[in-house]
Image (cartoon, helix red, strand yellow):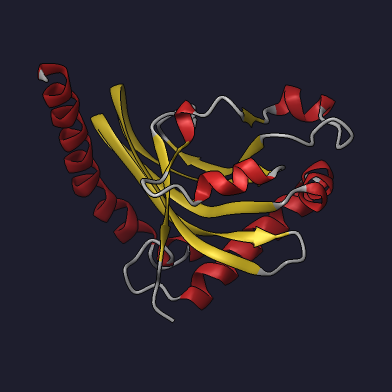
Length: 202
């Protein structure tokens, strides 16, 4: 019971840190970045879908192997812009969509998370999850959300992995690509991240 209380306290502090830092990030970028708009409560389905599709197209243009992987995937979960910030304790968040391999939109999602340890600053980035089998699709429908950092089936595709990745072997599990990293916080990961379905306004 005590350990649960400590964990809940850490989570609350992390979210509080993000609540303080995130408005500063959004305010400093609102005039120029399309990703800022999708992290606001007023974001529409149309806006979230358009920004997600544009981000995926940009990733495909820069990385042909990602395009080939997407053609084999059951779907690609795209979060165009994640905003992360913190002072010792941090939080992150963003919205996105699940895009079928025929280009249509299935559902809308948000990603959130907290982190703790030595960290300071703000960071913006996006990521895409290539869902290669039905079990990965099913994970999205979990009632309490999908805990990404604890899923052993997720493989983060770094430069070394990308060089050796082949669509003939990448047919199971989930492959994660990070893109458009900007900010002062150093490395990024899916540790502590959770994906939950949302129902934005039309």
